[in-house]
Image (cartoon, rainbow, N blue to C red; front, side, top):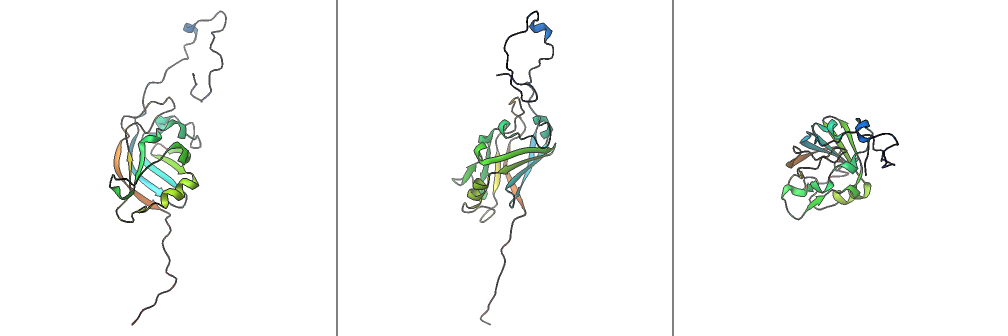
Length: 178
């Protein structure tokens, strides 16, 4: 299928009568990958938003900060590593786990988890620095533009996750034997 830069699918495959391909100089093929890179990750625990900080995110091709780009990212390349041990408690975040993915700015990509996946992930033993710090592992090609050209610069192994809006336990009472 052929799509334009706005996501519209070509409906006709025939050239109009009296025209030829040389008359269609507006056709271009995007083969340039985005030069996006990842620096750090923050997790908004109350909203279930993974905030990926870096550069070059505007090259993904989002038309606005409300243009959901989750279909363009390569979800098999984003892994939440509980306790940063590269062990069996790694969770690959798949497109089915994601409600939305927005390019908020050239330096911020925000991925909102679906509520059921947020609950599942947060309920895993060791989640959220219970033990050792969790990390995000991104393998090269996670970030792709609308033409599905993968970035060659987005790999980030062991990005320690910072947390925001995480609720803290409250002490309701305290007794002592003294």
